[in-house]
Image (cartoon, rainbow, N blue to C red; front, side):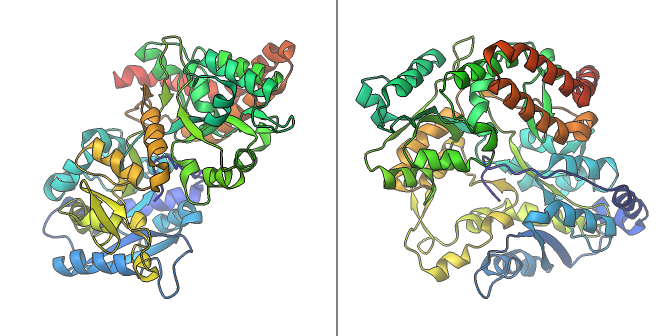
Length: 531
């Protein structure tokens, strides 16, 4: 699995045939009733577990046959007299392959999972999943304690516990960064408000402290959320709980403030920055941020926002910048202030992937026992970190990877993130330890700025709006509307200031008629239900 910040979503796209097959296979299986009841009648001795196949296994190893899968088979399977089998599914085709398996009703693993909330909701809606509440109560005490109620509720559909949500080690997403050496050259302080940042960006453009020969990009920008979300949400005005619930639009598992008061102001501010030459001219073509990464590495960018960990990986953005300009220094900043003077920014929900047991499974008890085993003693820590002295050393109780381990040792850790499915990231007895482990997973030279970026990403958090039932219109229109938001932003930001209002209103009208109004209407109805 990837870090919680790292967040890939796959559109659902279930065909009518597949949906019908899921229902038929779930409802016609009389054996599954006993299998899911937690009674002694359930067949024992076998358990099939989905595992992502990323196509990067070292020679001689596979996603389903390696050191850690053998650890599970030996320490859980053999010890419990259960034959464990890992079923590889290509990561790039996970939803498509899972749909086929779920439709078969016979070949589907006993434990399956997805990051896509729409896929989970559809399976639950169509009756394809096991009610896990009684199984958790009887066999999942360790698992329940590990996850906690705040995480578990994200696995409910209409109040029924149809999935086990993985727990995130940290929910922080975004931080911003600025060229400290440019500030020093101009004698400027680190900006701590939106206005101060604007003045700094203007100075970067007019004085070109990086000596770019007129190629300076004061604020790096793309059409990906990590670059604009902190700025946009800082313009959102305070609203009541009811307004926040009703006016939020959750598209592709992310809250969008497109209907909240202040969103238009945010886009108009970006229009101002664009027309003054303060943000990347090609931002609309750079959703994968390839151009931004290149421009930062080449020393052209003065400031930018990103996922809190994105730039610090080996051979990543900061490494490239340092290689091209050894004197370049980045500082983590938190400059986007809202009307209350707070640097509010969105964070992730506390859950990661959705772990499910198909209704057709005859081994639901074994499945919960396996997940509970993972949450007990030090099994999850072993799966995530390996062997002390060979793979890591302890520093204040936190495992720190040994950088010069042998290739043979490194191969033993293959698939740890994809086997330790109950956690997104390394989880310890406290959030402080989680954060410390996050920081220490990076090279020593970056740990100080990583710690600051992590702190920023969790400062004044805007939590996702929780809905006790899925909003059907969001599942129906979410993918289309997410694209509509991008179109609205691009066209409204790139027009001249005099054309902004007409362009924005036209794009908003198109957005609302393409499903935005349907979501708004349903969320208004859902608010009274949830209350």
